[in-house]
Amino acid sequence: MDMLKLLREAQQMQARAQALQEELAAAVYEASSGGGAVKAAVTGMGELKSLLISPEAADPADIEMLQDLVVAAVRSAQEAAAAGREQQLGSLAAALEDLGLPGLGAGGR
Image 1 (tube, helix red, strand yellow):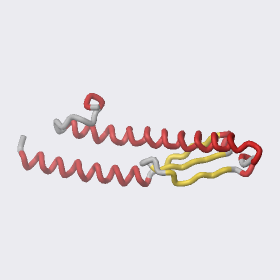
Image 2 (cartoon, helix red, strand yellow):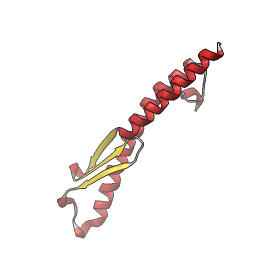
Image 3 (spheres, helix red, strand yellow):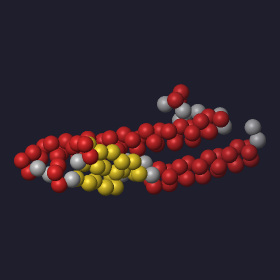
């Protein structure tokens, strides 16, 4: 393979990876629990951005239930973000494999 062509393709892949990282940081995934009593939003990188708790869910007599609802909402949002990351990274891995660079695709994990 032509080294100059390989270098150009590697630079394109690096730019694509950077753009993907920026997209993931900007993407927001939301989930709720308790019938919408608790809502969580995370970035595509899994960073918690917001947490909304309805007043009805804040029962001082049952703090454990509220804690469970918060954990469930955050976990669901993080799982959605992870699925989104996998989907986007899959296209990048396929492009790397097309270049003959294994290691990111399903066979390289």
